[in-house]
Picture 1 (cartoon, rainbow, N blue to C red):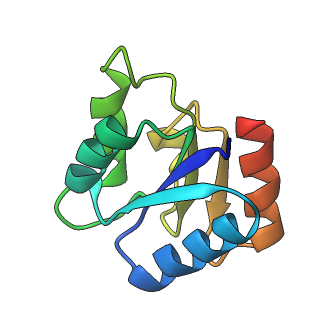
Picture 2 (cartoon, rainbow, N blue to C red):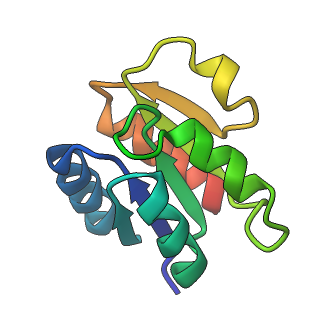
Length: 117
């Protein structure tokens, strides 16, 4: 069974690219455009990994991260930060990785594989 990855980003171009990249490499995907939508999708889909942008409208990635980490059933879901925001090490300390935008697709796949397989 394919591993499922939740892609959270407010930029539809980034979402489309990541979904294509992941699906072309055998992963299932689900998406959310901000932290509010992401919580609903996370609970419904139970992904194996989350790719998370930090700076989004409505609810930032850091706030979503703090919320979902309080949920016993969801808190162990690994997170890969993909963001253009500086100081990422201060916001999500136990992320499985951090990639700055623009990112290298091979590095995305490397970090995803390491986190879910």
